[in-house]
Image 1 (tube, helix red, strand yellow):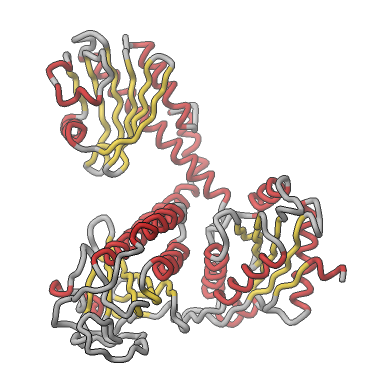
Image 2 (image 1 turned 120 degrees about the vertical axis):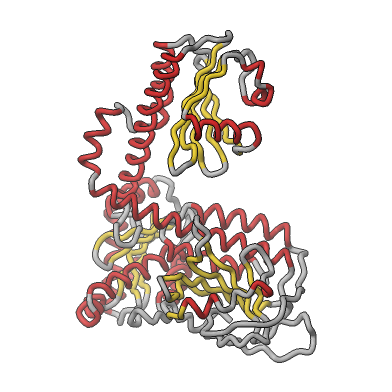
Length: 521
């Protein structure tokens, strides 16, 4: 099972499997989730998730399916000969399988063989009399939820290598990956919002300059502290930014700045709730508030806090403390509240600057970094290249891309570009970089990679590009590779050598990789 077509009703889930590899699995999961957190394109994240699921867990097959209104679209697969990415299924056929009796985790459902589900991919698994054996009719579905707990998609797995039903530890591991898919939805939406904001960046930037003279958050805090100290006899100034269930705290005492991240629980939760209700708080003598003692610097007597609420939750808070009781009055509180408004604008401007800078470095269609960043990256990478640590550069081109646009339209052409970009990015290491430098042309920069290493990478990516997709025509890629310092020592020479190799690949029949070294043989 990887996607399904219909079904409802019947029995409860069973158990099985082993947990001997739980500890190394968790370490590998941490590495994978850290990598996923840096990704913004959902298609890429979805592919990384299913690849990670089949690498880390007992299951050979995994799919991610995205909800689009009243239907669902398969977004990524791993372990299937025919991935059928793009396949559509009715959303109601999925919800029919979410029987509470089959729930086996927080967001997991183990669908039993008795359920009348018609799976799109049925594995060849021989029948067994063992009640804990996984059968061809079993299904394991994990729901993907948004912030409002609405279903936005599904992660499904199949074909356990052990042939056994999953145990609780395996379910927990799978739910970790499912939650990463949920985060990908949020990130994709934020990325889309950042692109929309970039369109009006010029106008907003002029407004931002009148509200704050810096676009660097690290410079905002010292300016806030200076403004407070010009007005108040402050013992300590603290800026707090809420981030979900945690808070980033920057404490400034004298010339020392301390940054820490803590969970918003216990007394901090009560303080946040109070600020959410009243907007400000003035405590004349904190010795009356023993619950706050562990969060305050020793010597603090007066505490004054102003908070800004967004979406009914505390977003930013600014606090000032003094080493004597009743140090501040109502006018001081009003000043702090006004300063907080300016601080919020400065933080927003800094965040907007970062978003716009990111958008300026990325290709809007594929999310890959652009030509300008490529040349900068290449120059930097060449500085570390040597015969022991060669640098491979591959120019990759989609074969006959003009025919794709002419025959199928530019919308399909755009999807083809995104498909190839996702395969390029998912097929390289974290130390490598992928770029779109124009049209259907991409570049990979691979430090510490030989010609043979580059061939292995490109062969794998080429096969991944060919993976069946119902929404795209058949695609192939050609590539030209040059390696520094063997083939060239400057950026221009290395690029030209790669380009010449790509030209030979096209002349030789396409769907292949050629190397600059071949020109000397």
